[in-house]
Amino acid sequence: MEMPKRLMISAGESSGELYGALLSRELKRVWHDVEIIGIGGSHMKSEGVSLIATISHVMGITEAIKHLFIIRETFKKAKQTLIEQRPDILILIDYPDFNIALAKHAKSLGIPILYYVSPQVWAWRRGRVKKITGLANKIAVLFPFEADIYKDTGLPVEFVGHPITETINITETREELKQKLQLNPAKSVISLLPGSRPSEIKRHMPIIKGVAERIYNELPGYQIVIPLAPETELKEEIPGYITVLKNLTPQAIACSDVSAVASGTATLQTALLGIPMVVFYKVSPLTFCFAKLLVKVKFISIVNILSKKEIVKELIQRKATTQNIFLEIKKIITDNKYREEIISNLDKIKNLFSGKTASTHVTKIVGELAGWNTTGAY
Image (cartoon, rainbow, N blue to C red; front, side):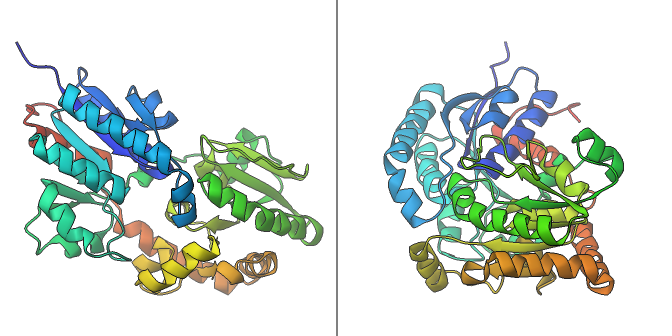
């Protein structure tokens, strides 16, 4: 009699749990009987994952201190689950401090470990490469340059592509998308993305509302849309001229003429959809001070990091103002040459991920590491 297949996924925040959900869907397609347990959110739950704890939405030093008790409790549950459930494999998605500590326990129990989505070791705390190398059986990375970081470590590494490409299945025209989103199909759209974590939304919404007001008063031909990630809420009052959409981010971006995007995975999503953008970001002053000391990259948006130059404007911390963001939006709209140059550079980003489906690649790796029979599965 064949033993039941069981695996555990540990994802710490919104984008990671989306990747966990996409992977879970593919795993269940290949192995209908697989039992998936893990730490995640609504996406993973909807794909049949039995959640032992929900994601923490923590970002930055001050936020982490506030959530320390919840993180500790989640870690205790995760350790206990490894001992009691003994999954065939543990899949770690980013969230390094938590997941590296969890990997130590899994390794001591003899559970194979796949690190899916490398922490941003290329940006800061490079020492984590050594820790991951000593714990994981394999690492699946999302960006081509990350494979180079691990190639001389002895840890098997594979560039699998980016799972966000799997969320972009837009076949409708802009007009059709606007109708679907109950927008005016005859009017152009500007989308404003405040981020996916509660702390990001809280910090960015005053700026976003200011930008929206400027658009409403000075660019009356445009509709304003704020797409929100699942499990996020806007706690303040929103003017009637702003349309808030939930769980429809790719569609909202795709029907836009331009987007203002908080730095994060959404910048890559916007790039893959070919929509010109301005990137902005603010953190607490304490977090920013630490980041300046620790972070070793010239740019913060993955779009510019992949391009090795500023192809989209970045407005960070003090520069992330209503005025600066609005002026960049206006420039993208009014300067055709500037706009076309951005779109041309975004096309090059798209080409990097062409032909790769991350969840399919990772499912094959899981089968190999867990020792499951994948014959005829693909």
